[in-house]
Image (tube, rainbow, N blue to C red; front, side, top):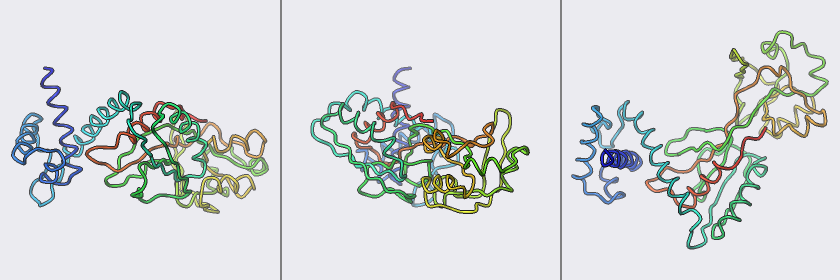
Length: 302
């Protein structure tokens, strides 16, 4: 039984590496197995699970529909193995390792400063360099090991890790809130001036709101679209319109009564704080170690 579990785990990691490599030949080079051995193990796996996982009809190996579902579990298994290794060896780096982290939202320092400081104090031979570049990153730059971002913008060849969730609310300047009639609930928002973020979390015109029992999706035409969450918050404070914003971003304005929550019983889904990096057959130890540390850090900020 134990031997079977070990073999299943190894084969699942092989499936992930084959997909990352794009072909059996490329996978053989990265794994260090000859083609016949790797093909045999893959056929045995498909025989064991009872379905084909790969479509071999073309030059580039492709996943079947069931294979795509199975791959998600393969990545999860590989990630757990990598995280387990990082927990054991992450504090035993022999030489100084520089981890280049890119954050693509303005308030990233609020989250990363405490984490980076504590991580550096616990890992004497690891140095984390954070570059904050406000604005959506369409891809991970080659000189960055990790991108910390709001949301999980799916990209081919990129792995995402959820670090925490950020509560959000509908916010408005007090004067705007006082002059509005919210008796109609969420649908009232369609007749009020609203704000959106042009290239990030709520740049589209559909707002999803939830309460304890129901979910409502509204079609909203923003009066202004702003380039960032901070700009959107400042416009909201000035009274230009209502906005969906993370609660942490509005905490000071709320305390000073420059912003108030409207329709507090209805809230948008929490916003994910994620880390993203290129998929590869072997994620660098420094990257894995920092991700594990961040997952253990308290990012539940409200």
